[in-house]
Length: 345
Ligand code: CP3
Image 1 (cartoon, rainbow, N blue to C red):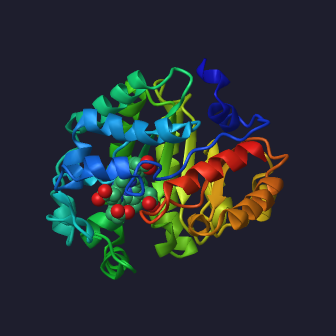
Image 2 (cartoon, rainbow, N blue to C red):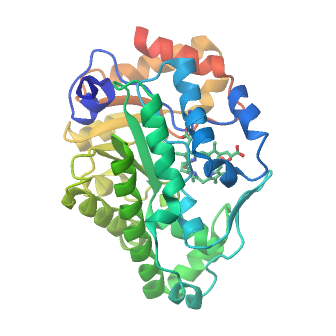
């Protein structure tokens, strides 16, 4: 049943007459039914630790829009939380780390990772898998080691991650040790997600753009590469396709494709023509409508979609998505309109 899924076919570089559709942040604050559940929890991470609630949240966009893939409801910061960094989400502030990694002693004293600390996530995966139709694939995910390290060192979100950039240039060896520890944790975490029932993996390198081209290799790409290698060499995970999303990597997607993921998810500012030229049908492509367009009138959205889909017309292995997550200010009707229009075009 699942091998007939448009999404998994596209990840296998098969051409579909209609592209599979899913959206980054398809479960989130733009949905009133999400906000209703969210209002019952003070801390976002407490909500992530409730597998029944997460299952309900993951199904909300599927029920509403009849999408082609579901994504685990959780967050990338579950791993730093399992390392006792005390992750909290404060109203209007985003993530805050109560015990960030502000010095090299904190790296030396990191506890060892026990994947069972995150058993609530695997329970959530098996709940969602059990509730979804068997023909609908479920995506599991993790943050890239670099993106997780950036939040952990900075101690939360930031515009330019100035403290982190300074820290890594002063302490490259220690940072690399941390990145290695996070890489192994990501592997164990994804393996447990596969055992619990996910059908594809997405790795989010949301802070790729903080690093120059050479530093990107040293602090991010090497570890994504190592993670993908570990996944490809393990009997449990080797057949689960991998998607890499990187936001504004300075070395472009050419550098990313060297990690040999099944699919690259394009940030919205990435050129489709150039990407097709670089990837040449050897790697599936996901993306990359600018999420800001969802604020425009339907006629404008329609024209944008027509132009975009035309570019991907003959590409083997195309998955429709946005170039970044849906923002809280989007009207859910726009997601319905885009979904219907993509299927119609
Ligand atoms: O449908 C889905 O995609 C839901 C699952 C999901 C969430 N976060 C839920 C979430 C996924 C795949 C993520 C990934 C994630 N988390 C990323 C990578 C993707 C990207 O956006 O670049 C990052 C960087 C994070 C870290 C994070 N989580 C931040 C910085 C924030 C606060 C800012 C914000 O967007 O709200 C979160 C919170 C978060 N994660 C929310 C959701 C639905 C909103 C929390 C709330 O309701 O208060």
